[in-house]
Amino acid sequence: MKQLLTILFLFVFAATDGATLEVGKGKKYPAIEQAIAAASAGDIIHVYPGIYKGNSFLVNKPLHLRGINWPVLDGENKREILQVEANNVIIEGFEINNSGYSSSYDWAAVKVINSSYVTIRKNKLHNNSFGIYLQNASWTTIEENIVKGNPVNEIQSGNAIHCWKSDNIRIRNNTLSGHRDGIYFEFVTNSVIQGNNSFENIRYGLHFMFSNNDIYMNNSFKNNGAGVAVMFSKQVMMIANHFEDNWGSAAYGILLKEISDGVIKYNRFINNTVGVYMEGTNRINIFQNLFKSNGWALRVQSSCANNTVTKNNFIANTFDVGTNGSVQLNSFSTNYWDKYEGYDRNKDNYGDIPYQPVSLYSMVVEKIPAASILLRSFMVKVMDKAERVVPAITPIDLKDETPLMKPLK
View 1: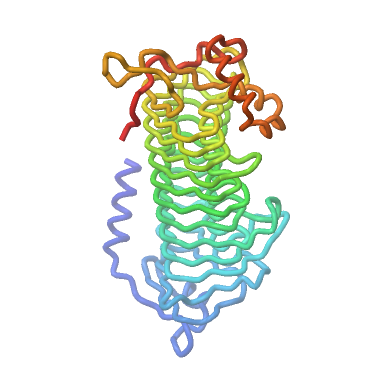
View 2 (view 1 turned 45 degrees about the vertical axis):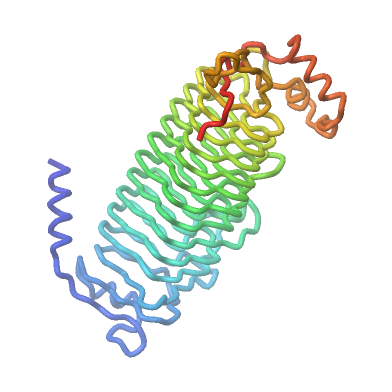
């Protein structure tokens, strides 16, 4: 019944032929606040070019605010700029700049509170503490915005898109840079993040905390402090994303911590310190990804169990797999490893002897990071060869019984 009423309301709202109000120099309404006060639910407000300042703009009824030729909403580095507290609101075509910073409040360029069916699209946000901020929102879409910050440090910078306690959110085709996190999810469920370009953010390109049943796909995460962190969440699908140049002492393509029942497939991990770092993860399916030119392709801590790694390409990584324990409870099969030196006498495209992707020296570096300075030495190569013949330190159960002879296409 509730769904029926919602659909009926949307139909009535969509069918309403709202009036158009005009804001700007020489128009009926010189100020945005005046137009909002005069408007009725379903009206469209056209805002013409100019710089609009003053108190924070509050949208408290169903309206469509459309910027014509990029009018500027300026927070003058003093306050929050635009706040939505109503259902069925559209914000598009604005430049929204210079929100204030507060150590007590999360001031944003656009904040949506306790609202549903809100769309924020095709805006340019620059030099704000938080860019777009959702708080207890649902069925809301954020798409085709450019959100660029001027980062100070991790503490004094907000997130480009911040979502808290929300449900059924769509975040598509945004360009996000210069913030603490490109996208931040906390207690967000049943949502989709797709086609975004998140780069040069201080901490993570995308950050999940306590968020379940979400999917992110076809995004690019490049040159962030780390690509993506997924923590204390379950059933997160990670599909066809690109992770590149997330490089540093604590940088990863993906950091997984205390998550379960997820999927990582069809992704590309190129030139990251670590492609995927796993700690306390269970039942993750890592399938048909490319790991190329990373420091570590995978770092699987001994606290992980029942994860499967199948049909991936491992090419030109310094270490294919690293771990910190002698016991492993995960499954590796049917992967291509460019370091594999076995043979295929029956020509079935599978190696006749198993491949052990953990090298002796990766175990040494795991315990003594400074030892990486000797990585290219002749003695290290000799030690690794000897360990492969007679394993003494590396986990003997961590092996691919059916390594592929050729990379998967």
